[in-house]
Amino acid sequence: MGSKRKMFLYGGGIGLIGAILMKLGNPGNMGICIACFWRDIAGALGLHRAEVVQYIRPEIIGIIFGAFFISYLTGDFKSKGGSSPLIRFFLGFFLMIGALVFLGCPLRMILRIANGDLNAIVGLAGYVFGIFVGVQFLKKGFSLGRSFDQPKIAGFIFPIIAVTLLIFLVIKPAFILFSTEGPGSMAAPIIISLILGGVVGISLQRSRICTAGGFRDLILIKDTYFLWGLLGILIVGLVGNLVLNFDTFKLGFDAQPIAHSNSLWNFLGMTLVGLCSVLLGGCPIRQTILASQGDSDAGITVLGLIVGAAFAHNFGLAASAKGVPANGQIAVIIGIIFVLVVAYSIVMGTSNKKLRRLLNNV
Amino acid sequence: MTKKAIDTSQENFKILVDTKVAVENITRFAEGKGYKVSTIDNEDAFEIEIER
Image (cartoon, rainbow over all chains, first blue to last red; front, side, top):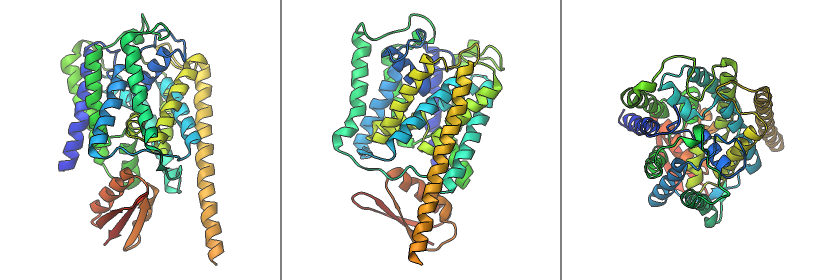
């Protein structure tokens, strides 16, 4: 129980920070959202031109710094990579499409539930379903292959990107775009976002909390260890919202901030996210943490997220409070098919190899 | 991850994994099931030995 309680406290800290950041000015139910924040960064860099979602989110920079420094101190930092980079890139790409059709990464999904948004419960059902399907592939031997040691400098690239983003954020050069209206213009003060992001990065790195891992372990090995972390985010986030953001707390489906109530696409969007996350071995937030501690494969995945976000807005795939555009619906279906085909062919490939080895031995 | 599914049937055996996270996951899982787990950190991989 001791370690589960620790997990709960780690998660609780993140839930509380989510509520605080929302109180201090972040968009509705978006205290922290990894998908939205990478999307805002993609916008700030001009990779997409959706003018309402462009901002270099200091929380992301803080998370990267926090995870990098703590992993460096504890010896978890290791420059690794080389495990199916292109597949990871596209899993990240489609993960982001699914997240932007639902409007949030799995972390925001929990934070949305914690502020009364029942659409997010539909999303959660889709997410767990996606993980369930992904676990079936894991059971059949799905693997993206092992990673190898990389030159040490490879592990520093991601933290260097964070430093660069911080410089852009502070000196605001003309080529960096900042929203003047919409969610991208709503933000907590930079310093506080940075520091709280750092705290989130440290607790996520230390605890290894992963929203996909929590449900995966529950389904695969009936283990609730990580689930306690998620429960911590939910419960402390809920209490934090009731105390800090009581005026915005609203239980129901309709008129939730930066959300739509199309249940089918809330479900399917998050199914795609769950499927991609479990095959990648981690949800967007976990990928960001791993990328910060030297994992080049996670770094590639995050680049996939960023490019996915850019495409989602350039091609009109992303949902909005008005609903899910037809393009977005098609993209989710394509994404699900793509991921299933990739997973299926990998599973078939490994079982063929096993068969051949068996025949050779005979 | 997938190796976890396998290790319900056998007795003493070894698992090779490449990341520390996998080591932690498997250790937590196996110890939860009452196995004795010891890990050797090789240069490029971890060797986990699981005993009944």
